[in-house]
Image 1 (spheres, helix red, strand yellow):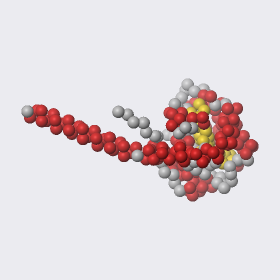
Image 2 (tube, rainbow, N blue to C red):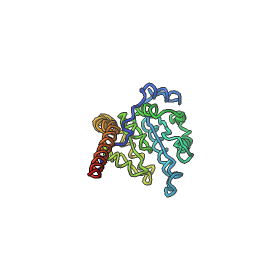
Image 3 (cartoon, rainbow, N blue to C red):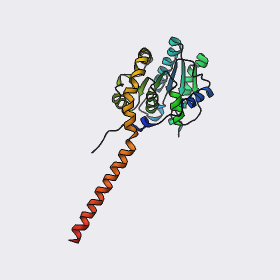
Image 4 (cartoon, helix red, strand yellow):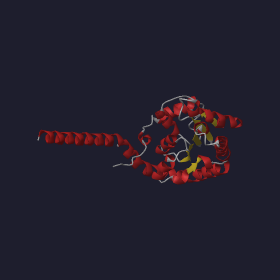
Length: 242
């Protein structure tokens, strides 16, 4: 039979928070200046030719970032969750375009281009007050650090993961992203941030614990199948000897 288990990203342990702060400082971000909005993007138009809304999607993300700066006096930090192996897969490509479109905001918008470990990225995500991510794993990393997140869905599994967490209301499909919708959803997340931050550990802790057991579950299943196979061979050998 089959057993549904959480994405293994839930089980990733972050580096110490101090490493995340150091990464931010090396990129020109003071982690003590709040509030901070973390953002990840994807070059989906280059990966999925059927998707023709890349420019509109990037424009909407930029508009939401600008609203966060203007309305809440915040700072935005653009991260590149995935770096290759091709330009189509490199998240820094769309991040640079969005960063350039917000150049007039100066150091209120920062792009972290340094290539680093996933654990250090997760530690940096944990320094954010809110997150607006397209890469599913970046949202998982932020949520497991108790950072409320908007998830921009580009593949169906995203909604399934967020539904598992009871957070489906914070999902918006990449084809439906618009400046108005994304700004409104970010504003709602801002208003609900304290309540969400308080409830995230209760939602996430059981999922994290189950994800940490996936390796053990696989080992137990393999051992059981090996034992069954051995028993079948023994029975077959006994039948042949008869």
